[in-house]
Image (cartoon, each protein chain N blue to C red):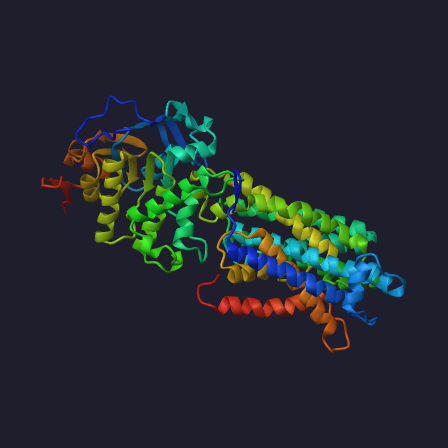
Length: 335
Length: 269
């Protein structure tokens, strides 16, 4: 694509795929705003969003459903972009913030905040971000000590993640029952009862951080060919990788803070997008769109399933993602 | 730029790349101390030596992938560390021993990545990039594979694709670490022929690390023999491939037999 002196490498198929995904997200989001106990027509929803609403419908949409949908969309996008970075850095389809313990680390902070300090939603979100970053720093340092990334990063991440998982369980057992229940709900990953407090951090995070990650994405793609190959091509490998991992952890932690630890979106979104768009380059915007779509689909499915219960979305993505993972692992030469 | 041919001695020409009394170390383990090697411009140099003698370390230092603890690597008259990293990548290309092809990447896409040092954030593709990629695929004979996925290729094809990537970089200096490993005899000869072409026809300075003495003897016009991090000998193949020198360096008895294409080295049992 050329615009005067500016020429950007944009592949038609990738661009189309991303646009289609975004279109689907918009349609499903509008639909999600209309479903619930209080039925609304999609046209009414659109009117409300345009500021021509009023009454109960407007309050339901603006205060209950819109925060829920936006939390889902932006948390999904954050996870998708974050997963794309980690899969690139670890050169492995299993490298994703939920597999390598970062979301568990973020959960540790959130649970501690809920159970021990009884903090507000903002405090919970902040603690999740801080402990998520801290976990990432520990895993990254341990993994880079031997000079290697890739499998090493994943294995150490799984190790650290399971220690933190045990710690999380311990805090739940030791904590006050009411707190433990609300922590447990949070742990299941939920879009229920989201308010604008949950929306803003992850929304701003996605809007600011995803483009930053996209700027780094070409260099990250070079690093996938090996540190030496990238270095000889003129990429500052360590600096690029460190910045990208920092941004990706921040995104994953913000998503976790907003919606609880949501499994597999980060793992699956980049892979699914890569297959659809037939892209081998790191695709940040594409993966983010796919993440948003996955999460909104999971949320709608859990609301619409005639089970009489609203399944927490984290469990929903866990079920879908688990099936996907098994499929991925049983395919020849895919991991 | 007229390429100096093999026959014209160019020892008096200022080398574009040299290591100047460098001390090279990995994780505190010193590989070489005060090592000086110069790479004559427009020549085909092979770095030889027994296992663990510091061949790869030297090559990595020459390509600024490893910072020397002492001394400096000089590229075009200036310490290589004082160039912007992309500027180095426009003058010097390196094919390391290990590289990964991202899953599902096509041959054309991988080769195109060699253009990275010539591109900027807002100028990601140009006519020159197209020309360079097409040319690189042509000379390495991978044009028909352009749309294929790199994962599906044979070892020999894959090596040619990586070579094409480094060639697309269009650097006057080419450094390759064991480009013939894992290739059968015919493919080894193919790769060395190609490098010879690039050297003679395009006047590129080629430096490769090799294990095979006989291939080295035929491929290059200049040999650097390393032993325990020092230069044991450097010069024309006939000067370096002497039984006494080789025996001392490799700690193995060898016989050097003359032949039309250059000396042939056989171990003596």
